Length: 406
Ligand code: SD4
Image (tube, rainbow, N blue to C red):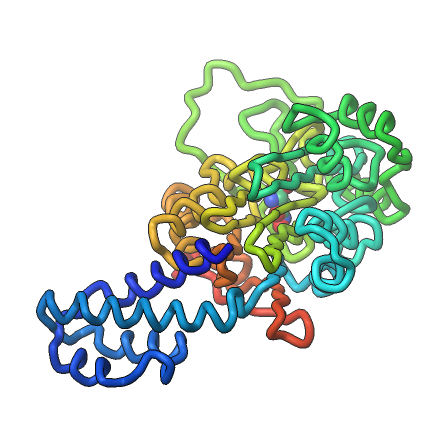
């Protein structure tokens, strides 16, 4: 914990110090005593001198000095902003639940992720994209994807295309806790859930059934088929492949993420000792092809955490995003010294290059509690929610998304 915090702060300073080479500023800063500085002030002052120059001897002295400032700061407060709960979208109830588990109830970071995400699944407080009663597939059934990951042990439990069980993230936790496997899918995942004592329900509500009827009435539009007969843009199936067709470049134009279609929860929780856990839960895409599993239960795509670095979670067009394992990518970029916001943005770049029309966001946090996010499309904006020990309540942050037409 101490080591991680120290390493992270040192990394931050080194990043900011990168091009400092100026004697004048060093002379200005050195006479002051370490105890007169706070970490933030030091960083702010160092940031001001990016453009200045100094020789190598002074650079080393400055490094020793700033290191002592960090050390004195750490002795006062090891993790000033931990614990941390951060999740996609303005799902304040989920954030608060996770916070109360980790901060008030003495639960673990995994308990906090599980119980926080369960608020969306069971109480249905996070819109139609999470849990039962939303987004029927082509046959009118709602199915669930979820995962949970432990940054200390690298253990993961995951379920895809889970049917007739509401508690998807808890079943994912059971996969982690009671099997040597990582991912279970479909009816067999349901059988496992029953064996573990989870109750069985219909996941469809009157609203789901009505939505499905409307879709059928609208000739099954929109849908996720391509290169089939009859023409999927005009008719329902069953479909057959078009043979001997020369397929062009990858496309993603049929059905894009809309306001009602984009609210998967991805959550990261870091406890006060610097242990991170992450999780996701979703019912995936509206009118998906039966059997479809999205990015949310796929390790490195929907979420990825590592106690030595931090974590990231994703939301958006999962069929596209999972091809780039963006959560893993963001964590890897943080390991290389990027801030969480820079890492989130960096992980979206290769996706944007190949699929400029996709919508997606990555939310990331370093192990010391620095956090940030980046998004693409989503109509220009996305939100994420945070709670730390320095906040009175969960706080929603809005971010501007890059757009394919700008
Ligand atoms: C999926 N990524 O199943 C999910 C959907 C989503 O915000 O995130 N919506 O593709």
